[in-house]
Amino acid sequence: MQEKTKKLKPGVVTGRDYLTLVENCKSQGFALPAINVTGTNTVNAALEAAMLSKSDIIIQLSNGGAQFFAGKGIKDVDKARIVGAISAARHIHTVAKEYGICVVLHTDHANKGLIPWVEGMIDASEAEYEATGKPLFSSHMLDLSEEPIEENLADCERILTRLAKIDMSLEIELGVTGGEEDGVGSDVDVMDNSKLYTQPEEVLQAYERLSSIGHFSVAAAFGNVHGVYKPGNVQLRPEILLASQKHVQSVYDTKEKPLDFVFHGGSGSSAEEIAEAVSYGVFKMNVDTDTQFAFSKPVGAYVEAHPKAFKYQIDPVDGTPFKKHYDPRAWLRECEKSMAERVQQACKELGATGNTIAEA
Image (cartoon, rainbow, N blue to C red):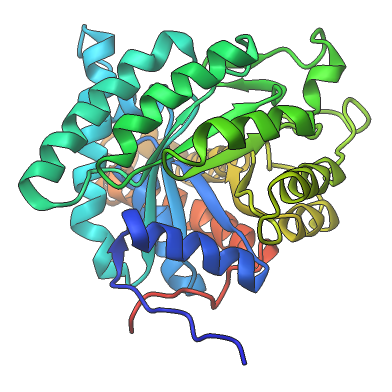
């Protein structure tokens, strides 16, 4: 008889509750969409979609998204990335529980040059943990896949040691996911294609170095790319994930699927490719390119439907006021609804719809 899944309080989950969420995804055979956000409109759209789907969700910020959250007017870009991420985290903590679902709060790709950004956010979470017993974020990501494996894992060890003390997780990247995410990444057209496929031996090294320190997940490269590319540019090989699972399991006699995998570059993937990756231990799939397009698309349609409202405050012919049309709340709401529809689609494709473990 299958053990009943523990229910969690709605809102941001960290520590043991985060691990419960991950384990539930893997045991039930579905994954959660990880949605990049840039402001309260995209945050609220993602939360609304999760609520309507009765699905838990991962909300994450890239370094550029965090900077934008703080405001591009802040001259100190490094400081803006940190305070923007903290501002986003506090907004999400405040409103998430009202949507009745569980939320993982994460930050996306941070290469070697962005380690100070991650450390600044950890500083804030350490202070929050001391004051409240909980960190601001559920997890952070280090993407040091372009560094030598030894350097990659050494930095991951150092950062995970800090995170584990405050009940946080670390996402790492092994192999290179092609394409670019806010300035972090590689050109899929010129890079060595062998780097698009993570080797099981590298995953084993990560397991040996990190598993005794704290919880970590792996963004493994199996031909996936950020952005949308012409068919045929790369070949997805999800079986690489299974090979890594079996390698670690055989060497250390672990339970089945001991690794928690992340699927980057999920936009544009087929339902069959997604299902296969999930069956091999993927609990999280990043979706950004598609949701950016979904958020932006209604702007053009709205302007076309109300062209005068974006040239005049009052109709020059008959004096009709256009305030209700150019009010940002009107067209931004259309953007939110469109993005929410795309996030709901992701929840359905990943099997997450109806599977929230939040208390009713």
